[in-house]
Length: 167
Image (tube, rainbow, N blue to C red; front, side):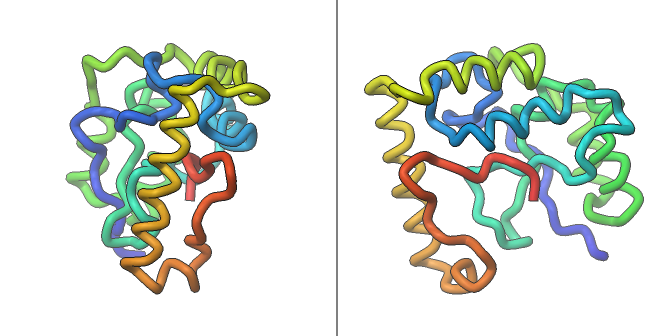
């Protein structure tokens, strides 16, 4: 397999579920629950790297999630180890992942991020609704500009934003 995932962005995106300043309730419960899976002991973690939801799902633009890397101890992420071994990440992307740092305030764990995110699932506030609308518009634009997304499962998200998790 050839390397196809780009390094993380310099800072987590504005709607990253790991950010402390993102409104609660913008992602689906399943997406928040995925964050918890990287808090478990290394051998029990998912094998797939966590990708940024702001990029489409094609291999040319997939990027590691900056919030995921900033929140977790990268030396204990099983997914990074596997991606290094199977060639999913090239040396540049792996080095950027392992040494990633940000000044953006992030939750200390995936569990904390998920607890915050799920708190307003039933009744998201106005800020959360604005975030969801923006995410939905961006995803529809991506789908419209790249017809191959429809055939690869890149359909527009349902009412609540999805897709923050590993791919």
